[in-house]
Length: 594
Ligand SMILES: Cc1cc2nc3c(=O)[nH]c(=O)nc-3n(C[C@H](O)[C@H](O)[C@H](O)COP(=O)(O)OP(=O)(O)OC[C@H]3O[C@@H](n4cnc5c(N)ncnc54)[C@H](O)[C@@H]3O)c2cc1C
Image: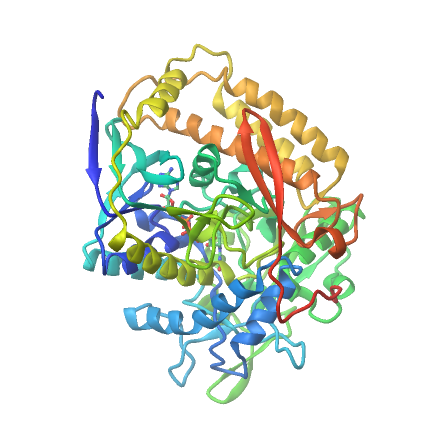
């Protein structure tokens, strides 16, 4: 094979975000690991996470992991697997303490314990009132997690292949043998031969037009697995965060509401009091996103437009915090200290000073609850019967454990990364210590090289960005905060046309070095496939649950639909669905009370 270098490691980790680095750190204590990342690791989207990481430390008020588990299950609209949720919430506590000991600079309470704040859906089970559970480092929590983990990985001699773009998984029958990647700087193909592969490649918010997600979040790992016969679980559940900056989608953390911020409609009313009388602005994200959408539809957006205001100005907000044993009212000083990045974003992008003016916000595509199906040790299932494919792992946003079910609570993704990243890293090391390195098939890169040659040399009439724009428009219009049979039919029909157009895409840059034009065209193929899987999974679920809200089926249907969707790719544009029951133990489904 021309220009193909082969590398060998015990295990390959695709992705240098929080999940990938946590897995790498733990696995590297036992085995030889390489992290391959298309971005320099500290540029991963984890670094953009603002508000906090959930763990029931109970530093300021009573809390315990069982309340955290209950909130997570309730927030998931009962679709989360409760055994996995227990692992998430129990393990969160020692994992956060461990991160603290690694040097993560959390904010602190005056007594030296980690500072915690309120976040949507996190409550005291006895009183139903919000509880302080989000551990944070100002509004740069993800950034601090990423930097801390990266330093620890460097210290532990993890091998890094930065700016290498993974484009294929080497699967032989029911075993994995490694991955194929392109070195972005040279355009050369590399084969990474290993006993185990872990995908920690993040989400795919770029399927939608208005999104909080970075440009790189194109679902590559999930799409690669799908093409190699791995099903995608619960893809119909994609979270829209209620407070993205109007038009831009850039996220305004829920931490703003955690610190007392309120949502206001065009009539100057606090409308969340109507939709969630108990928990109001801190209701879970699906509820708040739908409320904003309905206010706008009823003509109560600001100036009749499709946005509302998020107001944290001390003038409006009646919020007190404790300092030196005294209750103090929220102030400029407090906002600048607790939400410095948010203040900076809104000043830079909107010319709005959040201390004196409200911020214009609208729902923004934010988080994939679904993805590559795994158990709590990150082992990937190849079917709905829970058969594991040995050596294949996934963790972080690309995985579906499933702890978020139909809707994720704020702060639970960072918890998911560190808890399940760690468990997957440990399990993978255990696996590699006994597994043999199976031989590579002949020319493992040949198939994907043919696809790249086709993309590069294609003399088509369409530009990748045109197809991408159309995909984002149809997903935003038809598979969004609300959906119906009719809108999803339209999305599926449009995506089918776009799949054909994609074959006609012309890549203008024909060079080898840093050919981001070519790589972005390939990423678009991933997005198109995941968009189709999302629409196909969604149209077959005739109920409303969590983030999947159907106008034509507004009720949750536990009798028939308390189950996980598995979507398999069986040909170009051909998908088959299967289902498996949800693991329910302590918490029987109850109607939602807002
Ligand atoms: C703006 C924003 C704010 C958020 N705030 C919070 C919060 O406060 N609390 C919370 O719990 N959650 C938050 N989230 C969600 C959370 O940050 C993400 O779900 C999480 O960080 C995802 O981490 P990850 O490790 O799975 O992937 P990422 O951090 O997205 O990393 C993906 C990695 O995969 C690599 N990669 C991808 N494709 C390839 C490929 N083909 N080849 C090689 N490498 C590849 C990338 O280079 C990158 O290193 C927020 C998300 C956003 C977008």
